Length: 269
Length: 328
View 1 (cartoon, helix red, strand yellow):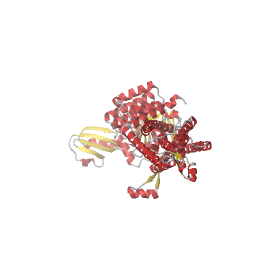
View 2 (view 1 turned 90 degrees about the horizontal axis):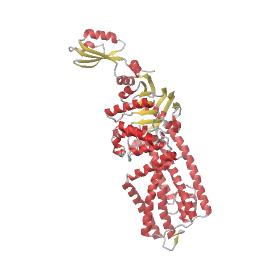
View 3 (view 1 turned 30 degrees about the horizontal axis):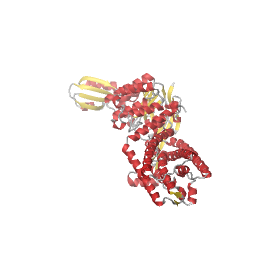
View 4 (view 1 turned 45 degrees about the vertical axis):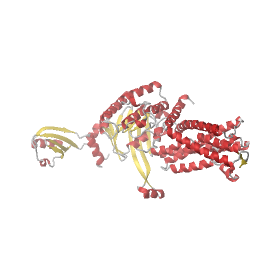
């Protein structure tokens, strides 16, 4: 890709970063909420699992690492501005992008990059503080292969979440009620991604069923990779499943976008 | 070369109706009435490169829908549209690099950031050189008198200032074809004039093809030789503005300064009295009988001064829209 083709998207990311900074209090309060949530889960598991026992297959150290890792990876994967797409379509603001030689998907990826950069900065500072103050028994993965695989799966998770969110936004082409489906989606992924607790403590049939869904690959899968608790078969199947979901969602998005554009009325005037 | 050609373009939307209030909301949940609105019906026209055209019609006539089809936002229900040889809806980069649609009530600027940040973004998107970018910003911000506000967050700007910034953002890439939808909305008279001068100059300097819609007939009268009149999605007139006057003006305006007061009754049957406030008298007389009536007036009315003119374009247009008798 040529440099000139990438430059506009860098500018988009930069503008997004600056835009977020104009609402400093907002950003701080949002992060404060995340820290509170994190601490609540953290102390819950600290109380449930005694220091040298294993509960539901997790040692205290593994569970606390899961909780902290889930905070970091959530900050990376779930921080996304794409939720605004539906509204932009509804209000007709989409027109601004259609009139320019710009790829609307790449535009939103760039906006997310700016937003994620900001969230990651905060998350890293927060987690470092928590580790320094609480001194939890964090598990550090020494096998670099696991760390690498985990990073790859996070990148795939970012794209998966992006596609799902974008697809929900496309509803805006057909209906002005873009909020209700999104709300349900929030609830679903918070649970099914393993953000509340690791999914493998669930009864086996449920757990197996959930793995067919795209949601575990948003959070649960990357963390388990980092912890090194998956067999080779599980790792291969996991990557395969998230790869297939990526492909399917991408095709579906392309199809829906083309259909939607023919419906588009460029409202707002 | 034809810059724009439109043949048999139609565009219809399906819109759903909702009664007001909570009850209406519930009703619309259960059964929704959809209605097809034909915004544009089978219109055709061609525009040469470098032409500056006025597009006139009342609210909801289909002007904006046509502009949206021309700029590639809407997928035409039927018919063919070509702009600079491209099909707008395909949105090829080369097409997008050469057009701009400016809507007086739409905004592309980032609300929380200074306008300059949005300009820089456009600079990268259209891949404009540093030199050209600086020149354009310098020229436009000076002309529109917003140089001091380039670094002020957009949300802190006044409506007029924001409109000007929008205009700059839309012109950074020096488009060959401009669609201006109500560009002077929200501007004061001085700025309206500046903007008109600018549009004329832009048209002349770059041989740009421009379609302009406006509620202010002043904009159209001053800028456009050719006008397209549209109502209910159909073209009523396409031709020179002067011909529009000739064709649709059914009467002449006669302004008289009287020497003595008269009884307006003696003018009954002669024409319509638009205004009588001694010593001023304004009459509207039928064009076909103008000569006959005028000689009668001169005989019967004590005249100090008389002037005969065509009615204002604005009045003619209003007549065209209000009377359904005119069909093409």
